[in-house]
Length: 463
Image (cartoon, rainbow, N blue to C red; front, side, top):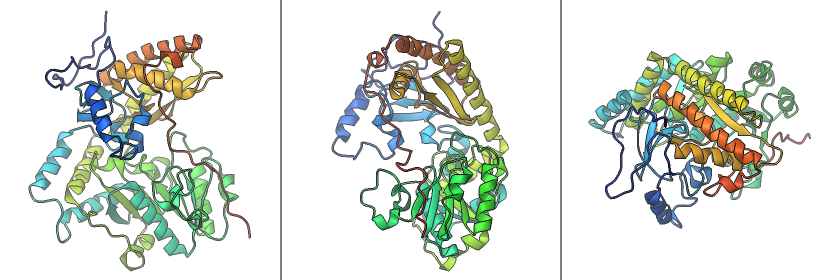
């Protein structure tokens, strides 16, 4: 008997005179995406790379099967422009921590909208949210707002340089599109070579690679405290001690870890202090805001010594959303819930893979945010990922190889997802055993994720 997912949302969004839209169930056919493709054609030659965020673009989904444009969301579900419904494990590529159209946050936005959005002087929410951040985030002695993650990572690097009088930066992870970071990637066109000569990288969980990269001109070390790999052998604590000994500013880029691992972020979760901390994504449930906070001795340089001011830094709808979101995260202990639901997915996926004798795929990472990996001697990992994605989408799950969870992901979502994994992995195994993964694809495969730099563990040249 076909298992039909019992939807929390009772109505399916669809337009008149369209084929019946797929919903969250074991659908017999792949979703019709005519309107998605029409928008795609209209964007051709109009919007570079089609997308404003690379991870949302068509290259990260199997082209010809996956939807390209979403119309609306509610809770953990989204609907594309053709009316097809999906459980979403992308969550806006991170910002949706509570759920789409989450009532407490949306009400706060509506209430503030009645009074206005951007004003000619400061607004009380600037103070109120800063006090709230100081209360929940370790070492958040002073607080500054902007709009994007790379805004605050760049400001943090500038503060570190101003404070230390040094120029060089050691980084590990992804930190945004600004010159100082992107100069270490293969997307470095348009950036002066003099910039790249000041930026170097190190390997995560390899304190020796950091120590070997230190010279007398290192202003700061900036890293994502964890991505999918947990710190080992006290790596973060050793990094903290090294920075203290060498007079280097330690910066945590907590775009992913902030308000997800713990309300207080990775500092609180791992028990280690950073000097400057950068947040965005999960803090406002989808509204655009980023936060730079840290120790007063450093942050007060923003008063007179460095210039970091933005017209929309005090925009009130995002501040209202941040205030409501942080309160909801605290009240419901959302990070614990994300970890609990994520562990069910991780353990369940790995159990299915083991039962099917598929050692070439696994679910790894911190419980609150996990990644599916594929590794096989003869089959291409991206093709295997594409096939699983294709079958997940057919069955009503929007999936990019990750589990980005929100507070609205229910037990029913998790249970259904594991049933879909069981069927999708069975199909993958059959294709692998028959050397026919590529032949099983109904569209163009996904493209490599832009994340790794082209030269990990680069070191300053010794004088």
